[in-house]
Length: 126
Image (cartoon, rainbow, N blue to C red):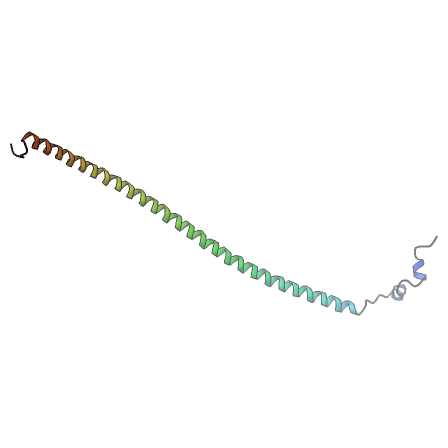
């Protein structure tokens, strides 16, 4: 059976571990700097995209609010037109009724005059 630390003897670990002084690779700082730069770039792109999305949402909200106001105004105008049409229908019925009464009165007058002509044998004056 092999021992757990037998890898140290075979040279699997770098010599700096064995000596107890660790020095990170030189490219570590450059990699981290690149990562931070990429992260910052992505952050700014995301922030810019979020700003554009917010601007679009604000514009859409204004459009929706404007459309809502127009629809509300149209509903009010429609209700007003409906009331006016009902008033016109009521006035039309009243005039029609009045005309029927006038027609009936003139018809009765014609009937009485016709009966008067028959009674006076073709003459209005008896």
